[in-house]
Image 1 (cartoon, one colour):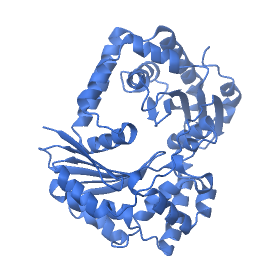
Image 2: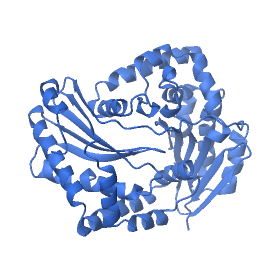
Image 3: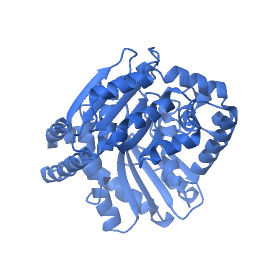
Length: 423
């Protein structure tokens, strides 16, 4: 029987766990509630840079010792930074969970930040930013967020920019670490065959010295602006990204957004995949996706094709969007895509690493536990009427943002900038 428990330490750290008694593994995460959204423009990218720096060494472990610590046990250690949080996570055998937490806590508490390491890693991150200019399928999303959200911090690239990283000072990184990596800003999550009380005692040992202090939160809701952007880049294909503002984590129509995303481009049975790839062969890649934040969301459609096919691809996407907005969803379609979404949720529930992330994000967003059964209940409550309400409210064809990037983009510029998705 899977059991969830939560404990809050006196310094504000929240410890959440889900016991999976038959699992041979344990997944652990130390979540720091800071990301791109919390950064001053002058130090854009500092959250991601800091994530790099902690792996260069702590006061008790060298970079090699950090890398070896869990790999030598057959485990995994990694981290990632988003626009709203940073996560350090480990996946180990259940008998090694204590070691995993020890290493994660070391990263979140004891960064050494040596001068030579700082200079070296700054060079590495500057190269990473430069390389990102060549990864058009990723770069197009950064361009979209920048143009759609303007000066709002959610619109900035997670990596920062060449100027902000080049000017970043060692003292600024250390100050950010001290100010943001504190008790109130940390969630520790664990799934697997791990006793909750033992976990709490270990967190108290490793992170109990963290101070309790409130930190400011950048909670201002961004405003999405419709736009058209064209960027010529060398390559074989032209890339397209179309977006609509949609539901946040807390929106009552959040699960309707899941259904609409699945219907449009969430898999091989989706409308856009079938119409544009399978029936017409215009693209190799086309899909839709949801980017969900505390008080904002984005539904996006991505496609890549030969330049000569782009006009036809946009025409097909536009006509399908208009059809969906006008006709809504049928009961048969709803049943199909509800089954797909439900199956995806249930399959994900068997992955303890996925569950580790889910219980942490639910704590971060809602401050409470949401078992898988409750999620399925919410999905089952979705109706044709509620999906059509979502379509009326969010699939606004006048509020479309769109980026065209890659080979032949300039030749399509005049046509692309005049596109009206309503016609």
